[in-house]
Length: 330
Image (cartoon, rainbow, N blue to C red; front, top):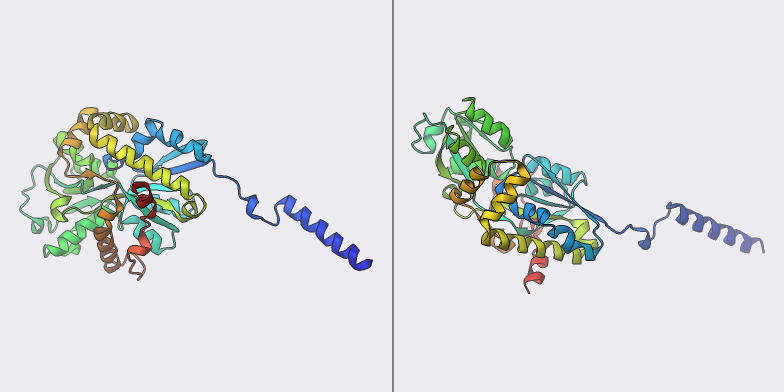
């Protein structure tokens, strides 16, 4: 009898703990109702803005229990990936290089789709006589922080051209600060994603001398990264995220003028400048992750050699999960 009373008391205590949330069960996990998206103010990532401003994110994801979609702007990829490492983002539109460093640091996430390729330019002040990469020796050049696409592409191009990056004064800057710096003659050149090159050139503060696609033909740039938890817990939701991204990518390729309007309104930038940026860049909006695998794995090798991945050389399987895209496309 005493033994029965003890067992009954223990059982009652366990029920109480579960009720208080002290002991978890599979059914305890709250259903996800808010999707948090990171992005940057670049025409590279206008697919995210189209989906947001046209209401596609919320409409497409509501059947999966999403009641709210929030997007958060970041100046560049490295701080965006730090936010994702901290658990503040569920998905991210970001350059393909920053996730490499973040995954090496322990980020539980994978690239599930491409966003675009190429699309950055080297811009020098009007009075500077550019005669190839060797003519940059001794100059001050502003670009995105170490571990970003721009930093990786620029340094690799210098090295392959026989120029030691250490012979330049390369300053890490966000796009706004870099545009201001070259306009105020505080730097000699910048290497930035669009629309910044168009803003500088149309303002008479610089001239485009090399496009990133010339430095590294068809290099991957931005991609769509999804948290590992979301992929495991909500695979059907992730499939729909990829579907919506593909829809937006097709839309902007078919309607670049409308995409320019959405971008200008979202970022409070001049529409004429954005239209010129889209016409003049060497980039292309894409969604197929298979297209960018070769250059992203090359980014991983370059970042490993630059010391950005803590001695870890990441491979395709560490960085990509193409299964969602494959299922969507059949």
